[in-house]
Image: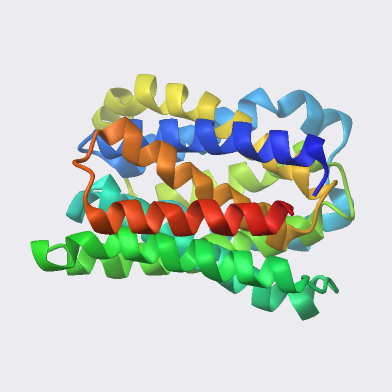
Amino acid sequence: MSAVAFALVLASAFLHATWNARTNADDDRAPQLALMYATGAVVLLPWLIADPPTEALGFVALSGVAHGGYLLFLSQAYARGGLATTYPLARGTAPLLVAVVGIWLLDQTPSVLTVAGAVAVGFGLVVIGGVAWGSGERLAMAMALVTGCFIASYTLLDARGIQETGELGYFAAASVVAAAVVLAVSRPTPARLRHALRPGITVGLFSTAAYALVLLAYQRADAANVATLRGVSILIGLFLVRRTVTGRIVFGACCVVLGAGLVVA
């Protein structure tokens, strides 16, 4: 992985952890997350107009649905568990799936170090999430695992889709589809949307910047490398929620750092 791609992914990880911590702290998350993606579409509208992703409409539609499923299950996971439980599992599941599926779907062959790094990152994040296993948050953890599957799905779709068209216009179009999916399923009232407007715009700016950086990184590195290194965001997320550090969390964090080092070696 090049130094530029490495810097792009790390900056994205910080922004991603920040908006997740902000969303986890709120009570009504679905309309906020829908407005988050709608904000992204508005911010990226100039790119959508200048370079519409007409060559990749199928990927746009599938990606939008995957992003929408990700938002819906993430909001349900956060409603049933804390950030230290749900965020690690969601982020840890995706790299493993991407590393395996990317071999044939994207015609990429991860190196031995990349595979080892993906396994280490995934294992470390699962260990961290397992700290809350006995705290009654098992349903939240199940939701988080499904969230991770959606993350892997849109990661693979987007990495393939932007090979056909411009990345920012592509993401703007997919964001519109994702917001529509969340609004159609959650059906928030106008009052809920008004209440979620300000936080939705705030996290939308953070989220848009974070994922735009990831899409730029996809142009410079394999999807498996990018998805694995993004797992470092969980360390930032744990710091933001100020969770008491335990031996298992320290062990999981060490696995994450080791895995990230293997990926960029």
